[in-house]
Image 1 (cartoon, rainbow, N blue to C red):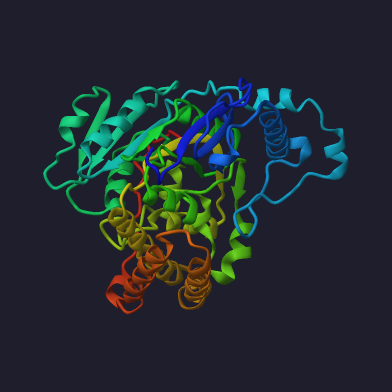
Image 2: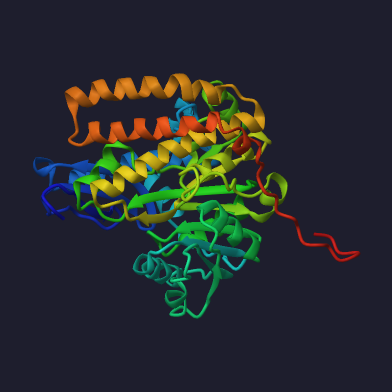
Length: 436
């Protein structure tokens, strides 16, 4: 950790009697394999004593009980801002007891088989990072049915890395674009569930098992999970995690469904709050129903938001997505300012492009309202806040966001681009007399 960074610490509250370490830290709290929450602390706020950790355990236990206990109102639905909608009544809260026993139950490691899961990893010119990701796939407690690596480089330079892992299927897709690569992975995959992660991610050992358990327990077509920072060594990484919000901070399961979509639709449905493409999974049948990833969007094309546009189609057509934080991955944020600025510019440009595509597909004017009204208001309020409160570097990142927004406005006038439609997944033929 540098002077500008934070130490990322993982604290198991089921075993911790106190944390004797000082310094600046982002503490991520667990109950065994169940993620509970995280807190950033400065030098004078650490170390955590035993009483503090016990209080945190009680608070987190109550949150998990409300979110996971059916008798107390679970499953929770997502509200307008993507937070859990409270469902716990006073009477039920007064009757609740044995919180620690409940945590033990929720923290039970999944024993579900992941043989129906195809893990798809798209990569481009990042061999060392891909190797780390594949090592974490190999360390899964429940092995997936298959691992498909889609190499989106021109010269196929990931083939040598994949050769070190005998169970990996290698697919070379030289056409540039993350959506193109993801679609190639879907077409190559054989599993009934297709799970995606990125080459700059490492997986928690229970990732595939938790995905399998979630799909077995819940009638949903899609799933997203918790994305935690792997390291926060630099100022750029800290800016992305703290000032930009990282990839979300919710530690309880949520269901995103039609009601969430309708509540946020007038201002452009807030589907980006559902999760991140670094940790998502789908039933294969969904792609047959609503189509594949939009190849106009994503890295290598418009820049980003190919995942959120797919979630938009999912909710708009009556589907639901479960956010299950027990499915955990660790993401390596961009470590330098130029890399972060390129990423943020691509995010905003792709976001605007996705809003245009969503408007064209469904005629929802809220998408145009977000482009022309909400985003400029966000830029103004963020400018005023950053001017007086910081943090360092936020104004520069804001300028990059504005540049991405301006670059995205071009898609409103690219009529040929706007007429292109999403490719469909053609299901395999069914043998006569055999039901699918």
